[in-house]
Length: 174
Image 1 (spheres, one colour):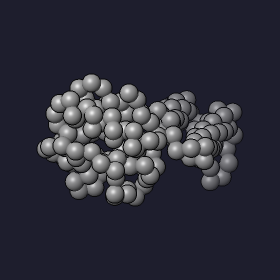
Image 2 (cartoon, helix red, strand yellow; image 1 turned 135 degrees about the horizontal axis):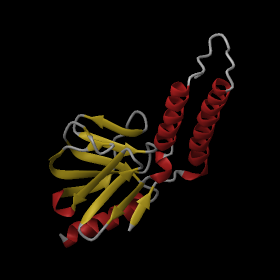
Image 3 (cartoon, one colour; image 1 turned 180 degrees about the horizontal axis):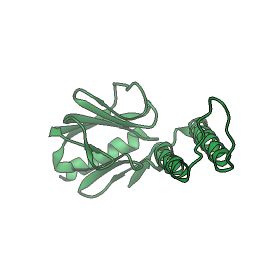
Image 4 (cartoon, one colour; image 1 turned 45 degrees about the vertical axis):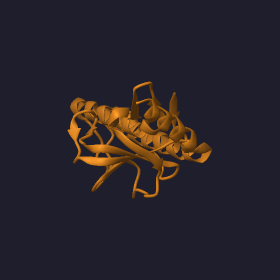
């Protein structure tokens, strides 16, 4: 069963504005640089290499800023898969999960946030569920960058009660 956090219309609208605004600003500077125009104080990419770098940055920004739209967590028969776009993916077997409960702590900021003992994988600091593991785990950003080990991971979902029920049902089968 899949769970995600959409955060309602306002949150989706804010993320979309951020994505569109950043994209239009970068495409404008790219277009101005490609036409060879120069403005004092504005660093426009005027070489093909600079334009390629700016285009790659734009693609990377799309991947990172679009992450909240591709956040989904899946409760399967033997494990729990936590995802946040390209930033984060973790597979937690039910045998490794000690308990799950509604979140009481809130992160400062959004995305993947590490604090001593807890890792937040959130697109907004509400509707949090904390998953306590039996032992400390090392998780990775982008699948390659290791984070310090934690024993608790917090995620947010649209319906935390249904998510908790499904996870606890999986823990009961284990």
